[in-house]
Image 1 (cartoon, rainbow, N blue to C red):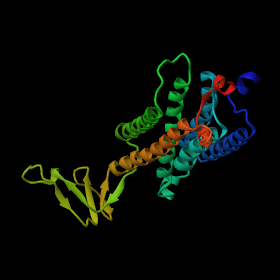
Image 2 (image 1 turned 60 degrees about the vertical axis):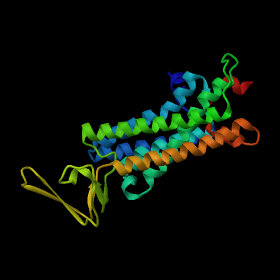
Image 3 (image 1 turned 30 degrees about the vertical axis):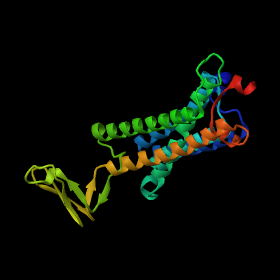
Image 4 (image 1 turned 180 degrees about the horizontal axis):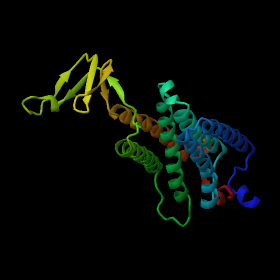
Length: 265
């Protein structure tokens, strides 16, 4: 039993320290939320503890070596997104919290995509050798695909479970062909919107939105994809330089998982 538990925790001292500190904070948060009777947040804490085991499990099962820097960033990312972002409402308190996490996500996913192709490229059994530019392109595309799938997930949560993972925003200008009285494909532009009223329940209930019109998630989605794009481009360029000169850009190895046997060689 002890051996099984040992398999699911990090081995390096620095990573292990961060792992247990964050795990302790999550448990404290879980206890506090349970005392308040907030069972949704208790479940979120429980989910976070499960997510903390994924890097180590993936490393063991796939026989890959995760650099300490990458593993620590993953733990911090999970904690920042679930505990700080959702439970402590950092998404609402800090305007750019979500932007920072999506940028980091683009960077990390590009690193993972890069490692998958680089491992194949350096394996003798794989007979096709890809150019550095192609490996960087695949890395970029992998990251963007993950980013798009994530936004699909957010849309599904909002559409079918009535959540607000795609954070809505107040805007003062809209442009829509739906407002064209002649049903022409010519958008009608409304500017300087300072208030919107929503009538529901046969007009018996009126919801007033002060300051403008409520944009339903599209700005947040496009912003998330754009910053994911920036993170993916940054690592793809770093990966390209790393392939061309692995000694000069050895810094990139801090973010790239590798096969254990390749490290040994």
